Length: 193
Image (tube, rainbow, N blue to C red; front, side, top):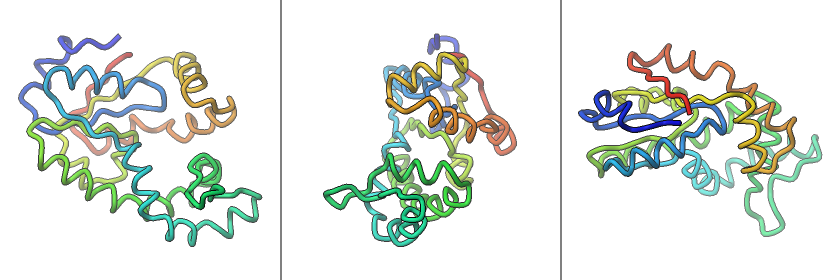
């Protein structure tokens, strides 16, 4: 399990870091431990939800036809984005995922820029920050959190209530995550959790 003392010398002098890793590896836990040491954390997953709601009209326009073809309703009864159903659509097609990212990433980038400007020691808790190189370049280190496949599968099943097939598809989509970070950052620190 992660202990801050094991990392203290490597991050104490830094101002912006990224905490990342695959689904259910323990990114939130690591971020919480760093917060106890004075860091401020922003969770990109939460920002994605906010950005999706802010971009609702664009998302509906971009995906409504494809969702209908697959008998998926991306809006709930109240007219809000049904993130679970949108995720089911997007995780089935890399092209659709890229299209959605092009809509929401500029919104997320703005929110993260505001956050890091307002805090002296900032954590960007994000799975795919490498897809926004301008944000990743601001990070002086990338803390890559890893855990065993079984531990992650059990955590994801308990936390999200998704089927094993849905979880496996998400895991599969993240299979090159560490490689992508190592390709774009000179300071990747791998943490077992």
